Image (cartoon, rainbow, N blue to C red; front, side, top):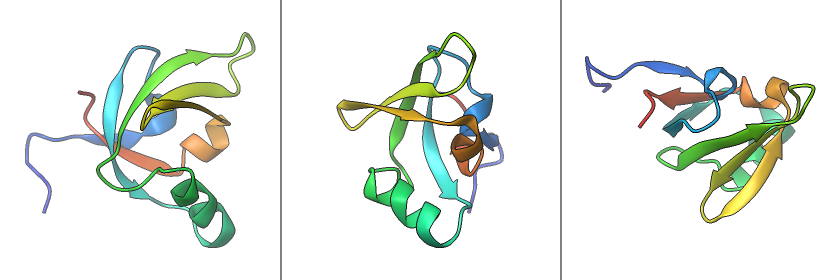
Length: 83
């Protein structure tokens, strides 16, 4: 069950410097498996580092490493309210 005070949004809506926890991965099949293989699973803290000059891809930090995702991929990841 979710907290009444928690808000969910998609990862692509966060701005550089914000952090949040992964709540759910909405993708199916190969894309879902790929995201999970990269360590993006429920409860993982993820921080937005920076966006490329044209805005896509975006660099994230999670589990001690940096990861770049396209906004289209980040849109599949629901996160709890920014930490």
